[in-house]
Image (cartoon, rainbow, N blue to C red; front, top):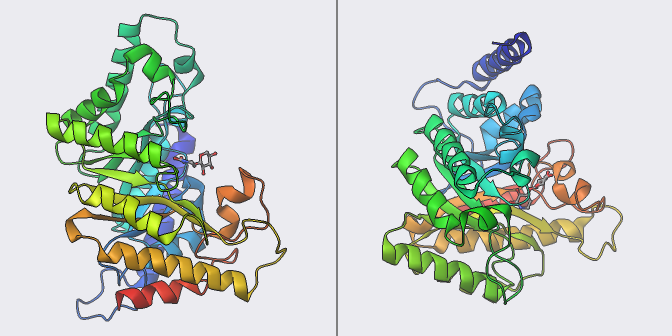
Length: 355
Ligand code: XIL
């Protein structure tokens, strides 16, 4: 084991040991738990995190108090894990999974195949298609198999469908080299590697883009009919306080649950200032977040229990949000906690839903 890896693991272990002591984990059974997003919900509530957060005591405390599920924002994608063609790198993912296990937090794997996180040696692969396919098969089986029983669920394929109504599948390297049935192949490999893990297809704009939703539902129906393993659909839910409409969210959600499939609101963030008119957070914006998130959490609570998988926020604190850096939008406050780890008004409002 490399020295730096050993030091990183030791560091993580000491932080966790300390956090366990302070938060009273392992205390008496009749201990009364404070209402929180971790303790109250009937379904898991989670966040996307990064490994580096686990060096920070404030994140660790917050996650242990307010989360029952985590996704990796970046580090479980193929490009960080398989940058070196000679070896899949498990160091970072191991640390995230160790943390979650010690903290009794579920891990949702995100994502095995995504056109946007492909290592360059795979993107530019110049061997045969059969060799390409066996590399992907080994990757999927190795990753899912390694975390069998420890990672509860995977986004098996992310964003495979085109936005336009015409050509159904995005022309990713996976489609080019493995054929139009590549999604099915990957779901089958994942199931072979772990018979119990939940398998999701995940995509964005599933509510507003009716034609994309139709394509995804048609694929799911076909899978169900032919016995291709699929357990649920992830709606990313990068939404605004006033878009899409409540009726559209309800009807898109029902299309999934009416088939008995689970639904995961997998990357929730709520733009409260979509026209960038405000330059600082204020009471009106805070109220927008309260209204929208309570609508979402109430709706989710009303779904048939067997279709509930959970709601994952795409980040913990506003200043972690990809809307700030990736979309270069400094005046957005789309998440549940402020830059100082303090809960915004939406937190108690959501907790009330579960009381
Ligand atoms: C984004 C992350 O938030 C960014 O930090 C990263 O640079 C790019 O990916 N849909 C997805 C997520 O499925 O994986 C994306 O996450 C956001 C859009």
